[in-house]
Amino acid sequence: MNLSRRNILRSAGVAALGVAAGGWVTGCSTVAPGGPASGAASNLLDTAKEQGFIRVGIANEPPYTQVSPDGQVTGCEPDVLRAVCKRLGIDEVQGIITPYESMIPGLNANRWDVIAAGLFMKQSRCSQVLYSEPVIVSTESFATPKGNPKGILTVADIIANPTLRIAVLPGGFEEGVLKTANVPASQQVKVNDGRSGLEALTANRADAFMLPTLSLKSLAENDSSFEISAPVDDAPRTGSGAAFRQSDTSFHEAYNKELAAFKATPEFGEILTKWGFDPSVVEGVTTEELCKTEG
View (spheres, rainbow, N blue to C red):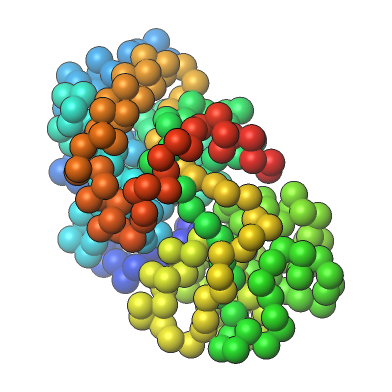
């Protein structure tokens, strides 16, 4: 299946690990969709403590999320989730890789219990899930051919030149930014993942590829064929945290309490710094603020 924003088989080099039709699970065991933590009548917090694990919907987009060749689920968001869950008495986090546009539907269908994947907050998403307080705050940039020959630095540049073609990931935050700015669909080139976005640039099917700044920097570690613009100053500030079903209020409340305590420890800053995020940027930023972002 295609993973919008990222196809793990092509962008992460983990094809040997395999993908199942209903999602691919890392960790000690495979949990079928609608596994032991599902069920509207259950209390997710109590159930997760009893079974000793929680299922998390993730992507495979470093530095937000990452799956190593041996199947370890890591990245900034899963590492924070794991640390907070341990404070709640839940020892194991089992990652299920899924396309971004399927994350909220899968959560609400009980295929996983929480999302921790850099699923940026915006009005449409905040109306469907309970977000924790932010863990990261992110900026957007454009990948362009060397020299940025079309001079693409802002969303306004795209609107001003109807010949420009911008690669975006279906269901991604960036697609929403362009839609909100009324960038015509004819100017948007849909790609499956980071690698195919760069391939669109190389093949001249797109003039730029819009993605979070740090995601592009991660791609640049193995590809020097493009350059990265400065953060797009007319794209809204965004960020993400763990997302829960609206019915899982007790877990959401307990998680936010422990997250606040964890943010006050050195370990929180160490995790963010390890993955290239500035922990000071998230200070004072609230879910309420980020959920006002249109889209």
